[in-house]
Image 1: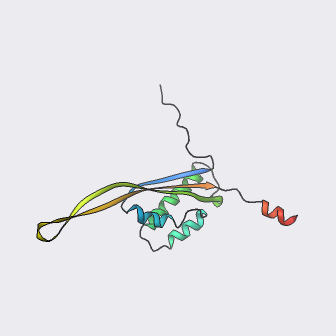
Image 2: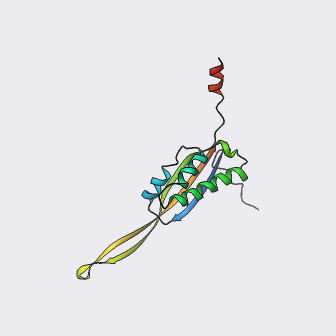
Length: 134
């Protein structure tokens, strides 16, 4: 006996890539993720390439993985891809201490994050061309 076939959670025109346990706080990762939400995939790669944020290179690698998944696993057209969803989640928190004066200690929290990027294929809009002809 084998397991039942896993039902695909995404639509047929979507592909996903996930990076887990990134050593950055969710707040900072969400700032970089906000740069690419709703953009075309190629524009998003260009934005992340020239971003000054340190975490932008990890977000770019995850985005390129999602684009590769769309092309190779789901046979989607790379030129029609847009970033439909970017989800940032909390992961573990490493707790450390920082020695303070008079024998006291302060807590230092080192946050980790999860990143999930979904790209979707958008069909070329033919409606504006038809309206101009009319």
